[in-house]
Length: 250
Image (tube, rainbow, N blue to C red):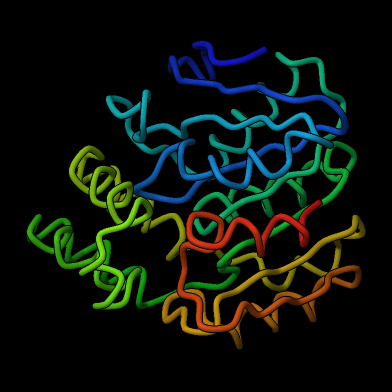
């Protein structure tokens, strides 16, 4: 239990495994790492065993390339096998939601519940354009933070803003671009009706990437899903609003 290094898909990465109870696996977005989930993990520890890890290209695994989504799904299977967990509640944000929904589609017997935060399930020109912009001009990375926070939040420079700035500075730009490309290319919407486990889709009211109308369409496509719109929120739901997200996924 606690923090340790594990090898997933041949890549050493960081794992944090804390708490007791039903297992919840948290899968982060790009360009973040497992620390994105710190507030939510703290809120869940009392009743859940919370597992979080760094995806390839991020955090402790920043030196590795971001692989295709299918490889990250295999990593998640490998992680559950390593922990001897037969099935888990998978919570994913953006890129993590892409991994989580594909994991649930491919391994429904190992998905006890599925929570998708700021998700995408069909190809997105916006994310494709962001990916290409990062490849052409690394300065785009410094501008992108304005998509996540209001001018007032940036001026206050609170802990969420400071964390996001750190990840923007620390994550390789190509990893970020590749992570966005995985979100841009996802095409799972037609398959979502196959999901039968309990599920929820959570979207920020002011999220301009994972738009509320797309999240609602995803929730409508999953027979067992509920849809939750977080008022006056952008994309970084669990980072900024763990107290709102925790009851939805508890």
